[in-house]
Length: 208
Length: 290
Image 1 (cartoon, each protein chain N blue to C red):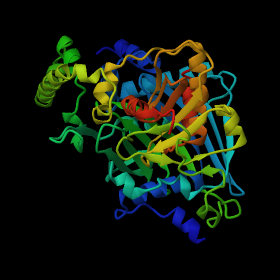
Image 2 (cartoon, each protein chain N blue to C red; image 1 turned 180 degrees about the vertical axis):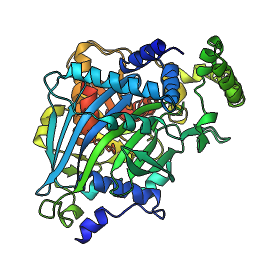
Image 3 (cartoon, chains in turn cyan, orange; image 1 turned 120 degrees about the vertical axis):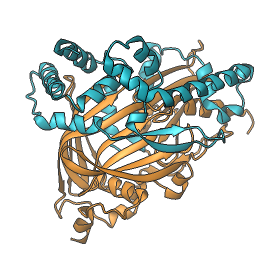
């Protein structure tokens, strides 16, 4: 990958324009690529400085090291299905064995780099089992489509499947205003969120 | 002095996951800390400045986004209450397994990983990295059942100190919840929930005149919680005749869902998967003659 590509890659990430695959790859590369770490630090500081010209920003090297600490976690925790449909067992697997399913498609399509080929080999086994599981799940879902269409107590049993069958509209301005009001109320008075609900509130306010 | 000693007591290997979570909640409200916090959700990244200080037993918190020019959000709140600690570890264990993981470094500080793994798909997996020395959470992430991190908070630099003796929250006062907490509010009148998602129960929330005004005086509000995550349910009479479709918003782990039932608008807000909220919405029943 050229340096120009890396810069574009990082820029897209910080602008919120990168997809999940790009984010995952960026996370992996940041752990080992010193140049990319420096670029990320530069871009983050430049972006924040431009957005806060009236307010001097203090952000030292710890800004970057903090992001790296977060990204370079040595394990990913994954929930997996068990034989009993209502009870899902959780297990910790090594990050090297974990990859989002959609990465398969991207990786195959973009299998021009040698490193991608090596990565694909190492991830092939778990991915294959995922695909098999997805096919089995798909056939079950087709068989139960009629049931899912009807709102009943069974929704509590298979909420995920039901939710996927419901299409959600984008709220209009009036509804969104009301939603924002309730979100503010929830975060201020009712959230049990562990890490400072007000942090989430400030961050939410930048979204909507 | 004993309190101070407890607050800075290092996390030791013998600490269980639940002990660490309680210690973490304690530190969040009792300690003074300031730093830069990065909030990553989906494709978005937000950098925030966080300042938290306990003065005369009152928490003072200022949070400002470094990504835009909006004003800071400042707030004061009463001293930490044990009511804010995950209310029932035993109940929580029915739906989460709490495990202690490896030691990590975040913001150049040693921290202990604690994972609350859900036993079903009704809630997110929650992962903390808890400061070894003070118990403050330095990193926190929520992961969905597709193994995707939906939201992540991490300090990139932080300064932590113990509140001075004169300013610290009085330990005696923390034993009794503030009077504004409304315990275990159930839906009133003609509304009921026929079946709650496993592990969820009606929880408490703060009530005040300001809160009543904010949500609307004729809006009913109750809270469901599994100990780590909560969902607010708002029910208000519809004033417009035109029905609106079910709609939703998402911001990281936070989901909002709104729909209409029996001439009422139902809005759910919570840090749980949308499917869980849909399940609650579906089981929310209106009885003309209860």
